[in-house]
Amino acid sequence: MRSSPLKKRLNNYKLHLMKTTSISMAIAMLALVLSCKETGNEKVQTTENLIVSDSVTLRIDSVLKSFVAAGDIAGVSALIYEKDKEVYFNAFGFADVEAQKPMDRSTIVQIYSMTKPVTGTALMTLFEEGKFQLDDPLEKYAPEFANMKVYVGEDSSGKPILEDARRPITIRDITRHTAGFAGASDTPLGKMVAEADALNRNNNLVEMAEKMGKLPLQFHPGEEWLYGPCVDVQAFLVERISGMPYQQYVREHVLDKLGMEETRYFIPENDRNRFAALYRRTGKGTIERDTLTYSNYLEKWPLTRGGSGLTSTLDDYIKFARMLVHEGSIDSVEILKPETVQLMATNQLADSINERHFLPSKGQVGFGIDFAVRTAPPANADENNGVVGEFFWDGAASTLFWVDPVNDLTAVMFVQLFPYDQIGLHKSFRDAVYGPIEVE
Image: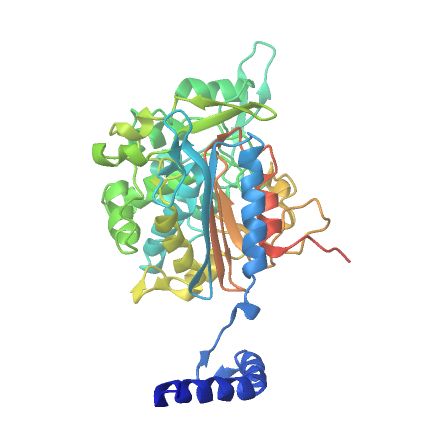
């Protein structure tokens, strides 16, 4: 039986392909090499140029899955962009174990202190408008914080001994946690703070500031780094300077401009089925559901804190991170100028500030404006991994994000775990992304 002309043409084509395979492979290899070079003003990228390669993706998957399998977390999700491309997304385990609801991309979580960089961004939009300078005294705009006293002990009758602050609190102090505000604790000063209850959610920001301004400071402004309510004062300051309720200001000037519609203080009824449960780790491989925090987000309260209180989704928060890696702009929307983001991502702590609370646990870092700023490579393999120039922060429920300008990489990891990361999840995730730490 004679072959049809079409069959002959197909056979000839197959023969041609076989003869040219080696040439094609050589061309492909050459193209791979050339892809690293610039063409005009564009950089053609291949996966060979990326931090998050196929093998790294598998490594991240393995690490995140292992924490779920060990029973130390209910669920986890992560999203990474590199060079303006999504290079990683996955989710493991449950957002709600009892309801058997999987953790996924649209899960809404409590981000706690990852609210802080959002507040700092809102504040710095006013800085760009010339509404204040960083070294202005806070009392210039907020007389509630004039004539501050510093707690130095108690006399024999148990009465607090106070002295005048050596200098006023500045706006720079409240952006870098050097104002001196104390937290509630079992110490005499801590009990005074607890009794004032400035952060009660039934207070508005003005009432919060009035109560805080009457409390003595734990140390003289600018002399120590102490994590506390500084960013709540930033929210109050935004409200005072702008003349607009803080929640409205941050909505209009940051969140809505970035399309972050699901980053909110209040979750409406029709979205609550996506709200993740929060779990407490009570022992190795043992977690229990926490129910104390949910009313913060299911009712509308007077206090809209700058330091905590927002909920978000992976895709919402990555927009914020990507705006920062682009130095203030994304998709033709400008939130801040490049020099402002650079200022925020620059260490603001002088070497003379030796007392730094838990900050050294974050690695070789200083602190900028509402971010930790990595100033040196990891000193040993036990430290958190990262790149010099990176800035980042995390949240009490063990969430994490970072911005890596060197590699044009942004990462967000969501989990809902109390107490804050006692299982090494952050380090393991970072090591999975960048590879094991190599110290010379």
